[in-house]
Length: 522
Image (cartoon, rainbow, N blue to C red; front, side, top):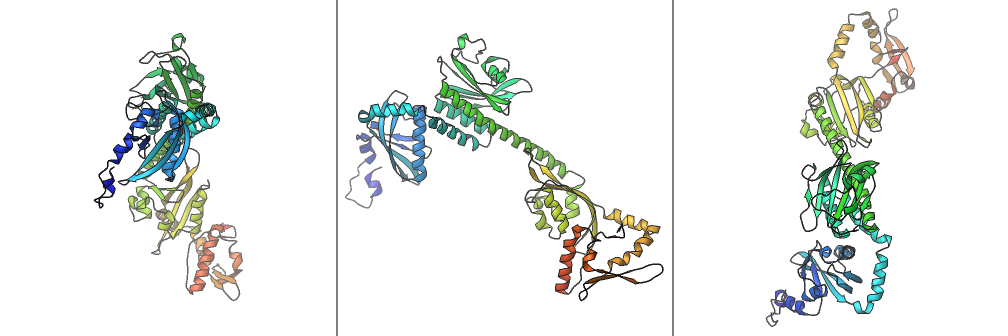
């Protein structure tokens, strides 16, 4: 940047190259983008840490623990946009050891936000005190917890196996300073471990979901096989004297294998090898075991999700092509899938218009007893529908049989309800036609007038007329509240609501319900 870039209207300001002046000054600074990648370091910064080239990130420059702490501090400034200043021990991979005062602030330029870090070397004044404190911090549980928290956030924000594995592999190399890392997927059916991820420093991450392209090994061979069989971490300090060691491409000197276990079931193995003897210390072991535990939870979650999606795909396919009238709803009573028969019998919409719509909003005339049955299914209670009558807006009456049942997810939670229904109107009408020629019809006709009744407001009574052989139009009188003893409770609310509406609007109402009188149902 030049002074003239920001003050073009002032002709008296000289065209001074500020960036050149800063680069040549004793001020030691670096600039990072919002991904915490270095985009510039000046000459003093390079001299302080013995840099030959511009590093990509702090993990290329510092020891993993140092890089993690620096990244944490950088993130705080980027998130809050508030400048900060602190002291930190900085140990580069080239061996430079510096106690520094770091001033961080954000700068906006051309719509982008950058992090400016000014580093002041205070090693001489605080070296002994600061290094002693640092060595103590490295052994404290808080560091281990911070590392696992970072892996936890990374793992549980990933949406696919590939994303999980690649992120874990890359971060393991940085934080634990590993040369490589392999992730094996357990094929328990064939007693195999299939390498699905291979990460090596300085190369691109290799991934194969099937595990067919890379290394495969039987569970009874090698260090990874021993780890998988015994379900415990195996550390080999010197592979040349270990009887179970099997070389993949190159002969390495030490190896660590950590099982990924969920509820005593092997899901896979984390494995790393090194050309150095006794590379894997207790810190690496504990960290990898913590990562394996987090991975086990996430992989189980992804497996359940895949099974659920596969089952739901099968279920929705079955529903869509089913000859019966079936609708699948979620917990908000929104359509997930419907059969063609459902479309034909119960709606004028097509399936694309129904999916995602609320069943009750599309069918506001559903009787309350049906709605209650559907809602109870969400609590795990199935309801049978047996020749229920439904009056359409045009006055026609249809009869249905069917069932409302809950459906479950793989973790045994109710995911919604399935409604199966069959229009049996024609069958009911045929039954009625047949009964007209039978003796039963005469009995039915005797009670036919029972459903023509009147409610006397002044006396609070119900009156109807029963036709008997010996007495014609003989009145039968009951108190209004007694009538509900003859009627199935599921119809009570509907009767009271209709009656109240008829009185308020001075109009008439009608509906169909079962009726029990003198131990007979009609």
